[in-house]
Length: 180
Image 1: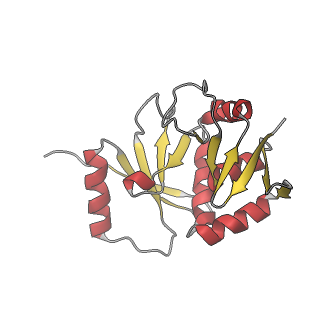
Image 2: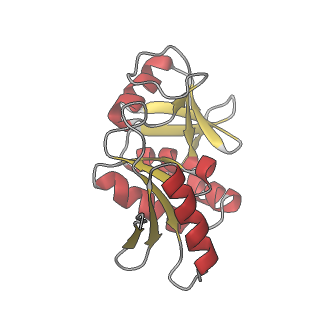
């Protein structure tokens, strides 16, 4: 049976801790309130999901979303429209998110590192994310300065920097810095 989440402004809340634990155990979805990086789904707190996670889980029929006390149902199309008003290039970023999740990778927000996503093979709390990823449209320019800044940050935090360009087939460009 799918979990239930309430749409609250720009995030989703799974109020039922048992349902939240189930979603978290599926692939490190969301963050339990007040617990930064649990290694196991042993928490007794509401689970906070971002809109990208919520949309993906709705598409997988693992989540029903509602709004307000009257629990008015929210469709995936409605959630997508809300997300597009709140986040620039949401649809393109979501395409990359979905593709990476389908490949079995764990994808979390990279805002803390100035990128779109942190990408894990195993999951947060079990490893440090080996990749930081930024999504660029195929007609969007990226300057050498942006690449150098991202590369320096990635090197400092021991991660590989990847640019994803969603198109008919997403292209991934990985940068590797080395010491001379």
